[in-house]
Image (tube, rainbow, N blue to C red; front, side):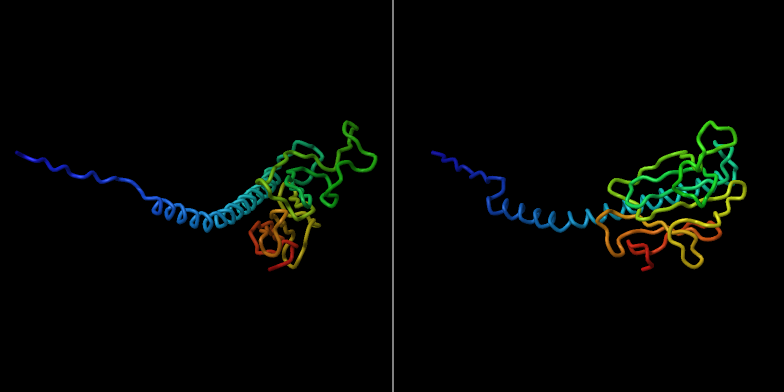
Length: 198
């Protein structure tokens, strides 16, 4: 008589202990990487806002040097920033010293020879959650693109204007800054959220 021996099947799977260990490792890795990703994401939005604003300032200057104007009375192209706002305007202006005024006294649209001080050409949104910490305008003269003689915003030394951008919750050195020199050169600068130098 021949007896057959049966091979015992090996179960292929995980034990409860192995499964709990794997879940514990994944939970630990997630706890470590999620805060890092959140910081990375905020830094990317800051850089995106910086690049966007620098490009739009360059657009205003290019429009000024190419004498583009939809308003025949405009003498300047510029950008207007409002503190704690997530938007800013590309605009033309008659008078660069009157940043926020839309109408000059006694002047209204449609009156011959009378122009509103500023005409908004385009409104831009910053990346989600971002705000400007600066209130004021940066203007470039139509024809030669020179920086307006009395720029608005923070002025210091050879810096004509400074724009500070960050999240509403940013403090200290978390914000990013943009500088406009007397020559109209736009560059990134280290800056504190209150607008002072680092």
